[in-house]
Length: 73
Image (cartoon, rainbow, N blue to C red; front, side, top):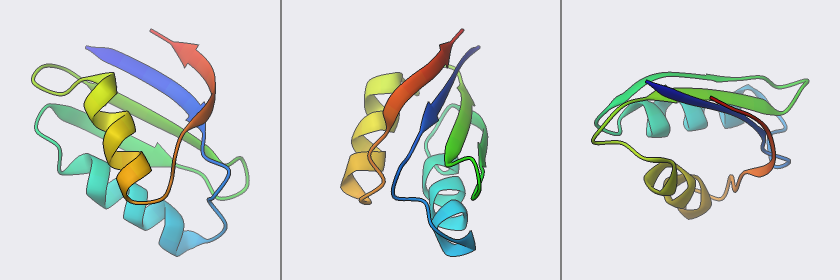
């Protein structure tokens, strides 16, 4: 299992966090997604067939591009 914690500057409300959690959570292999409004941080845990490249591409596609990787496990 892999995980990343990163900042998404475009998060501004509950709709933003809900969209990120729903869209990323639908990717095959993603085990959990938690997005915070105040911190603008997102934590994603996944295993194959999901990958960081797929997750990052999806976030960019839905206009919530990740910036500022905080932690990589």
